Amino acid sequence: MNFVAYLVPALFLSLFAYAALRRVKLYDTFLDGVKEALPLVVRIFPYLAVIFLLTALFERSGLAHMLTEALAPFFRLCGIPPEIAALVLIKPFSGSGSTAVLSDLLATYGPDSYIARCASVAYGSSETVFYLSAVYFAGKKKKLLRPVLIALCANFLGVVFGCFLCRFL
Image (cartoon, rainbow, N blue to C red):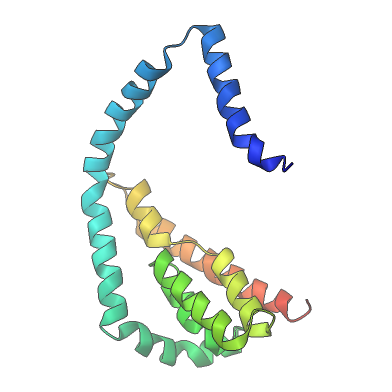
């Protein structure tokens, strides 16, 4: 038998047993949590809608392709294969878009190629910065430029370092 298949049910059963010992009403506690989540969803929704709209416009307008072509020499200079430039640019905006680009790269170059390894590292070492900033900073009156720039720089340095390591692996 596979131990991992029993892990999640065991966690749920242990949670229910712990709640029963502590005499916690699980259903009522769950409903209280859901009631607190609904105002959060309402507060975050406009920010997420803007991020999704801007991401779609960035990809469909051709700006992503033009930017990829323009930055390919700079990426090559930094040790990033120009073939994964689109992935590096799309990932901070869209998780699903970057997954599609990664799938295309794996299908085109093969999963064991240097480009596919770099693409996989770039995909795994970066984050959808704009989506997360919309979620975490929704409704806050803080300046977002500094944290977003730091996150973008960290993403880029992670890709550069990851591609450097892929040369030796």
